[in-house]
View: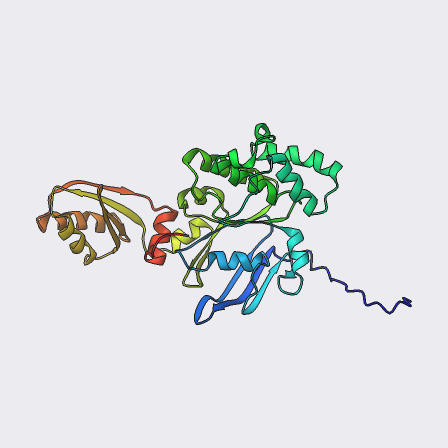
Length: 329
């Protein structure tokens, strides 16, 4: 029997089979603006989950709540069984959070920067001296360990921030736009690192506007718009749910604007986009309907230079499901 008058807080352990992320009825309002509208989301352990949606859709808000940086207005959000509001310290032990905009201490050397964060997590120096070289090797920064952070390229700083997120070996990585602003080579490097982390069994939730690249990395995607999850599942399943079956590409010798308007009124035609290369048509029909559309184009007097078909990808799915927006976040 404990004779001390001090109260000892105990934290009950969640069930072993609990999902890594469990969100129910999550709502967040800012004054009159409702950023999240009672969303539900479950992500199993070991899953790489892609979070996509237009600017202001609610991706960063959801991630900030999961990272315990923002309190929900109502609803429940749990990480590994721990409620983010009731047990934020337990949640922080289990997550590595990389925001879309992050600061780095420019006057530190890379290795000093890593030691600073390792010490902040209470990792003893002798353990950090073994751990930090491994993390820098993982993110391909071993040769930059003695370089000052302000001399690093944007891609290197992104990878350094990712290494910082891993210093305490978190079970969940929350990465908000990790490839934002990177050149093609840096994006490839980031993608390869994420594949390695996936192979290590990490659960990763990642937002990105590089949608085709995201499709190569993720197990599931969630599409959010206006604060609501409008679809969740693996890429193939979501594509199969779509009205759009294929994308047709047309090039005309003239009357492109007129043809764009004409196509919008045709059967089986969904979204129609026009750019300098030609007209892109999201089409839900089969081969017979496609042939009928081509015939109708000629009958209507349009001079078709080329008419080809391509398979839908994650970007086509996103555009069709959200019906556009003011960009991607």
